[in-house]
Length: 632
Image (cartoon, rainbow, N blue to C red; front, side, top):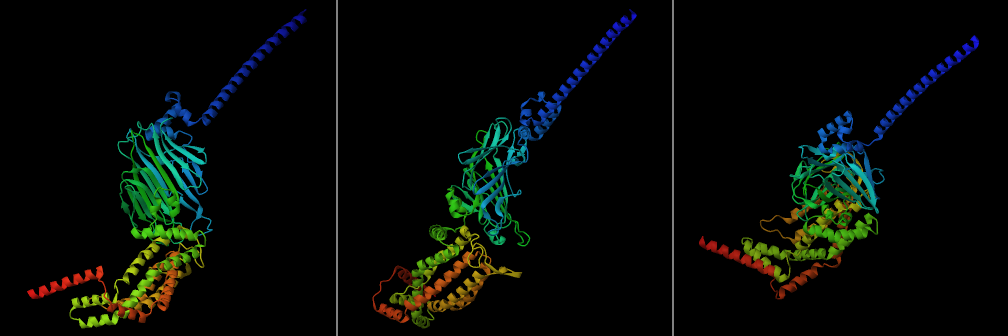
C-alpha cells in the first residue's frame, strides 16, 4: 500500500511541476511576443517616420509632433518665417527638372526655381564639329532672383528658397509649375511653358494667398545677372558686338554702352536682351517694368588670359503687386541672334540686331536681308556673297556711270576754268560768278559728280552693319576661310602687332590690293575734275595720299573682321574696276564730250534753281562788298 501511495504522490508532484513549467513557459512566451510586438511596432514607427513626407509632418499641429520636430520647425520659422513650409517639402533638395525640345534644353533648379542650364542643341562653340554645344547658362554663370520683403520684417531671396516642381503636358506643350509655398494653398509660382521647335518660352510669375505674407507696399526687385560665355573663335570680335539691348516707351529701342561699368536707367521697359554676338538671352514682359537699372561691364582686359567670359550683365527690374498679388505674363528667349528667327517671335526682338539707323537700317531690312536670304537659300554662302555683290554693283552702275561722266565733263572744262581763275585772280567773287556762268552755258553741274558718290555711301555703310550681323555666315566655309563670320587666318604670327593682331588674313589683303588699283585708276580723273580753289586744299595731293592710306586702313582694321565682309569688299572693288574700264572704253569719249559742251554753249540755257540761287547769293555778296568799299 505504501508503494502505491508513493507513486500517487509522485504523479501529483510531477503534475504540479509540469503545470508550473508550462505556466512559466507561457509567461515567457507572452513576454517574448509582447517584446516582439513592441519591437515590430517600434520598427514600424521608425520606418513610417523615415518615409513620411515632411509635408505630412508639417500638416500636423505642433502639439502632435515630437519635441525634436517642434525645435526644427521653430528654427525654420525663425529664419524663413512663413516659407518654413517650403523647406520641409520633399522638393527641398538640390534637384532639377528638364524641359526639352528639338532646339533647346533647359534645366530648372528646385532651389530658386530659375533656369540653371540653357543649352542650344543645333549650334556648336568656336568651330564646326568641335563637339561642344553652345551653353548660354551653365555652372552658375547666371542667376534669377526676387527679393521678397515679408510682413514679419524679413528680406528673403527666392534664389535661396526651395520650389516644388510639377511637370505636366498639354498637347505637345510641356508645362512646369514651380511653387514656393508658405502653406498648402499659398504660394509664389514660376510657370514655364515650352512648345515644340521654339526658342521662346512662356514664363509667368503669379502668386496666390501672398497678400498676408508679403509686404507689397514697395515693388519687388527682380534681379537677373549673367556672365556671358565666349562662343566664337575671336573673343575681341565677339565682344565688340556683345551688349545689353532693350525696348522701352512703347517701341523705342536702345543699348547700354560698351566698356567698363556702363549703366542705363530706362523707363517702361518691355524687354531686356543680354546680347552676345550670335546668341542672345532675352526677358520680355507684357506689363512694362516702370523703371529699371541695366549694367554692363567688360570682362576682357587681356585677350590671352581672359578667354572664358566676355561681359557681365545685370538687370534690376521692379515687379508691382496688384491687391497684394503678383501676376506677370513674360517670356524667355534663349537662341540665335538671327534676324528671321527673332522677327518670327513677333515681339520686336529683331531690334537688337545693329542694322544701322535711318536709311542704313532701311537698306539692310528691305534690300540686303531679303536679297541675301533668297540667294543663300539656293547656293553656298561664299557664292551667295559674290552674286549678292554683283547684283548690288550692277544696280548701282547707272549712278557710277553718271559720276564718271560728270568727272569727264569737268576734266574737259578744266582748261577754261583755269583760265578764268588766272584772269580774275585778284577778284574771287568775280571768279566764282564767271565759273558759274561757264557751268551754265556748258550744261554741266559741278555737283553731279558728288551726288552719285553720296548715294553710294549709305549702301557701303549698310554693308558694314549687315555682314557682321549675318548669322547665316557663322561657321560656313568658303575657299580657305573656315568661318565667314570670323577672320580667314592663313598664317599665325609669333608676336602681336598693335591694331593688326597676331595673324594674317588673306581676304583683307586682296581687298586692299583692289582698292589700291581702283584709286590709282581714278585719282587722276578726280583731281583733274576738281580744279584747285583759293583757300581750299589741293584735291590732287589728297588723292595721292589716299591711294596709299586706304589700302593700309583696309589691312589694319579688316584683319580681325569677319571674312565675309572682306570678301564683299574685294569683289565690290573688282567689279567697280571692271565697270569703270567698260564705261571709259565704250561710253565716255572726251572729244565727243568736248564737242557737246561747245554746242551747249551756243544754245540758250535756262538757269536752274540751284544755279539761280548761287548767282543771287554771289550778287548779294558782291553788292555788300561794294557797299563796304564805298563806306571806307
